[in-house]
Length: 313
Image (cartoon, rainbow, N blue to C red):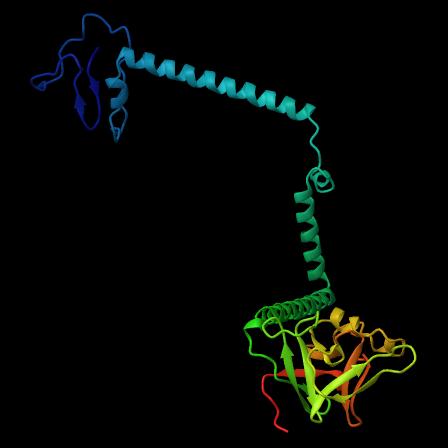
């Protein structure tokens, strides 16, 4: 092939480079016309030579062709998979999501939806928010009151369990008159002939209180007599009133039925009642009229506080 001529540079054929530029044009035309017209070079040299193709070998072309075939096969396989998926979607019925919310087979989802809807309703109506806040406040207050009552009962139970470690009771102070009655305690460590422990002798007027219950012909009588710890008519017991059930258990008289409490909001517990050892529905009573033994009503005149000190006359 002949030389390629450019207006800016002169390039030789790849087979042979001339050692010297010709001094003048050839005087004769070639003996044989070329079989192909000469190829003209571009008017501007390329910015980068096409080195990729010039460096490829036959083996490299085969690898490229094989990779192209592999990519084509993968594309065809993906197309088939997509067609199969479209066919499956067309023939499959998808259950609406609302059916899941109403189904008992998915209780967790349904519960979540219910809570979500309730919260949305609160946001839509400000009155509901205020009501919810108020209900929450009342709930927390009631819960706190309940816990305090439970703690108080536990504390009272612990105190009763540890009562054996406490010092002996020396007197009872009336909650109505604030007057105190000195007593003598009898228990397992200091027994008498009673079947109930602990029991007490109640001192007053230089003797001990004696109660004689109704025997059918006489009404009950009480008076101070010479002290005798083995005389059951001089033996009294004391019970701590610390809950509603215990409170109402002492009110058995028909005349005092209206004294039975329906709830504990109207009274304070943690006081004592004093009863004859063999007649627990009668209570020691101290008021401005003096000392007596009457049917239990558990008003202030029949309530006493324990004291660990002897009262001087």
